[in-house]
Length: 157
Image (tube, rainbow, N blue to C red; front, side, top):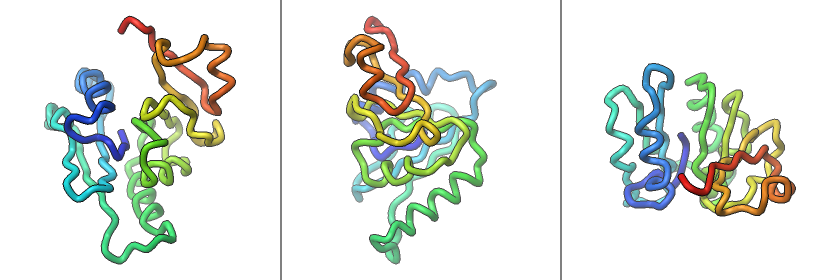
């Protein structure tokens, strides 16, 4: 899970925290990465429910400049983990997340509900977008607005 809003009390963390906490750790190894754009940003408490989960809080370093070198440094670290799936809470709410989302860092990459809009990235980079049926037009109509394959969760969950 990579997000700039993986913080305590943020609506995205509140929306997905329970589901991520209930993932079967016999099937999934879970790593959380908070891309902290704010000095006060602390990672959400649900990320500490399972001692085997890994959590990282990343910030730009003093020597980072606006040329994107920090993105490449973070991407190399993420690639070294050889993850099967990367779940981005959002690629539309953070320049940090958006830049990392432009790179293919895992075989499957998923975007979701920061705002119910596409990443705009080619499907070869971000394959899926997870949304709620209540936030979307009917599937066939809604899909036309996404570069990713749209997966809609039922409205009643």
